[in-house]
Image (cartoon, rainbow over all chains, first blue to last red; front, side):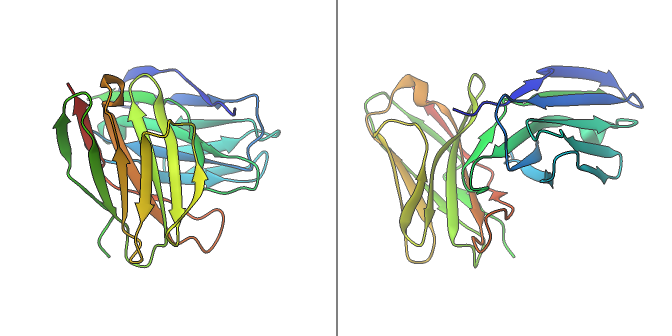
Length: 113
Length: 114
């Protein structure tokens, strides 16, 4: 069974601070996705990383896939209240299918104004 | 295009009852996946349907079942409800022409079992 561990579980910071969220596994994933989920909504895809060592940037968000494709990190620069939400990582296993994703339990981020 | 819609949005049932949840995918999407989300276990994969056939299945008991219709709409059914079935049930749709396509999630159905 492939498991994804996310840390920290909860994070409360002030507007303007930087933060990093981690997603770790002992298993190799063919790709890894990051989602953000807001209350009352379903998860919304932020990014997919596929290649070991890959770095992708989305405005103030930087995503990195570990060289061994077992871990990933999400770094947010100068966090804003609009970044508040549940951040989920999800891995696609052997075969690379995204139709059967393994999710971490998420990091609940609160950015205070 | 309209997003993924799920009905009902909220549901209260009692133990032993059964429930059917509905998911309408984005127009043109042929794959529908179902997930259960709880605070303790997070998001867990239930099953995935493509062209009316179950293509992938998670580790849930047989009380959880689903089906997909010719128009790609999908339903999931939970029989003999237990308290632990209280959760947010999410469906996600995808065009299913490539392995790594984005899945688009609906807002979910929140089920409370009393």
